[in-house]
Amino acid sequence: MTDDKKSAQEFKLDPDNELRFEVESKNEKVYLILKAGLAEVFGTEIVKGKTYEFSSGAKVAIYTWQGCTIEVKGKTDVIYVAKETPMVTYSNCHAALEFMRIEADKENKKGPTAMIVGPNDVGKSTVCRILLNYAVRMGRRPIFVDLDMGQGQISIPGTIGALLIERPAAIDEGFSQEAPLVYHFGHKTPSANITLSEMLINQLANTVKERLEVNKKTRSSGVIINTCGWIKGGGYKQVLHAAKSFEVDVIMVLDQERLYNELVRDIPNFVKVVFLQKSGGVVERSKTARSESRDQRIREYFYGTPKNSMYPHSFDVKWSEIKLYKIGAPPLPDSCLPLGMKADDHLTKLVLLTPNPGILHHLLAVSFAEKDDDEILLNHVAGFVCVTNVDNERQTITLLSPQPKPLPNNILLFSELQFMDSH
Ligand code: ATP
Image (cartoon, rainbow, N blue to C red; front, top):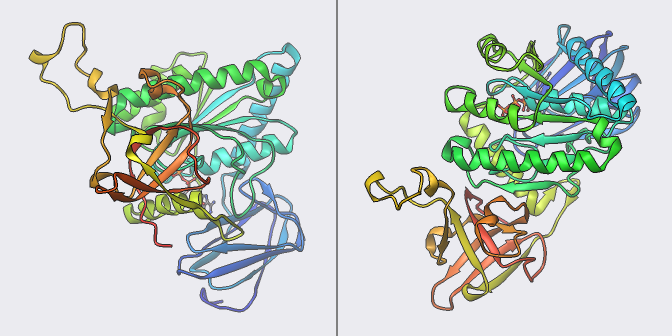
């Protein structure tokens, strides 16, 4: 069977097999129908007879516990059936977490907080999705925390956040983004400002803890944390920092034995550290593919998905109507530091910016902060706008925004991330 065959192809899968495919060509669509049996995509059950649509960039695995027949229509770039998958191990991890949730329920305590770590492209986000889907299918309401600033699944790149999971992820569009809790970081990798990143992780951890305290069901369901693939040097310190902040009970290490051994050495004994194989299906992404996927996420933030289009607004605001801040000032040499100021304090300093051509195409976070003081840094954000024009003469900027005018707040934070609006 050729890969690029346009007509329908039928696959009969034995139990514990997985059909994997990728859609790469632009504007190509691939359709999938479950004809018989039971199957799931990253933990979400497929409805028999329903047509699912996948577009360019999709990398999908259809796994079956019982065996099934699947029809695939359209041009896939790769398509094959894998007989070896780590799904049984992942399902055992779910069972262990579920056991901890049952215990938590009995004692009215906090359920498990599990963090998934590993290098880039080992399937960390996918494992989180599988564990969350399995939990929600058992009637749990876990919190998903995403600390991956570059390729996260909550809000847009350059942020960290948390989401209450109330239903399984949609097969083609992921988890529904209702009322996410989002913190603005403004860079695509934590190495750009480790001090700020650690402060935001603490803040997010505290807010998540508060939410667990007030909601019994969520408390016993626990938390699943996704992390970024930066795990060497400063990245490893961040992993330790996040583990401590969130008081994790379990760390699942994907693929890398060295990281596993380092964590066993450095993490207190009451935290379980487990090693998991990565799936042979996880697709490595090049730098370009990562950058395209960031663009895609931002585009979807403003314009929605093919199934769920959105129509953003464009409007002008006067420079005098907003307060635009950038986080982080240039460093001062040690000898010039004012008394009592630490050498890295500049990293979390708020600098007021006058709009200028340098902010064109940049994203700006709309803060929830009520006062413009240092707390702005740690406030979560209402959403994002993109600067599509800077008019020096009229002293206005044009913003692309998911909401119509007026902005929910006049305090805006500059992001290093850019979006070229080609619509
Ligand atoms: P990052 O380094 O960006 O954080 P990650 O480790 O979180 O990546 P994922 O995003 O989970 O990795 O997976 C990378 C890609 O591989 C995704 O597009 C995902 O859909 C795909 N993928 C994961 N598991 C499978 C599988 N079993 N079969 C086919 N594709 C898969």
